[in-house]
Amino acid sequence: MHDNIKSLLAQKLSEKTHKDIKDSQQLVDLFFELISDKNQIEEIKNLSSILNAQNEKRLKVIEYLASLFGILGIIFIALKFVVYGLISWLVAEVFFAIYGFIRKQYAFLTMNFISIVFEIAGIINWIKK
Image 1 (tube, rainbow, N blue to C red):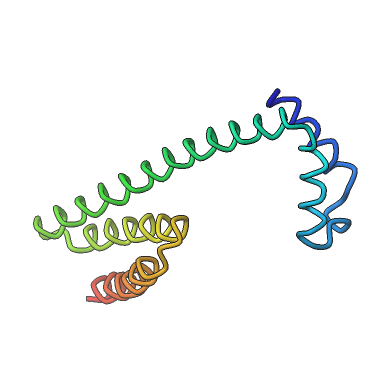
Image 2: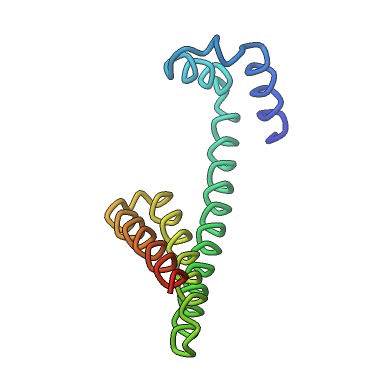
């Protein structure tokens, strides 16, 4: 049934070009035209929960990568490899910023963006020495 919904959606979208869909209401109308059947609505809900679970797994990967690079940065700094530590922290902050953006945690995102700016400045200053 998922393939049926996908093919119906693909067919309807291929009939309309991007220029034809001028506002979100037209897209919503197109969507509800596809899900007029209650069985299709249930299938879409199931598909949505599957996609949400997949997104959660991806977010966990991003979160763990950010933590890993943050820990590597601390280790590099402790071992006096400052540039490598700053670069690791930069990578961690980018991952954390992506995570914050996806989760709509804008204060967290802002903090990470400011950290990214100062880490880049730190890397540049350290390399100039």
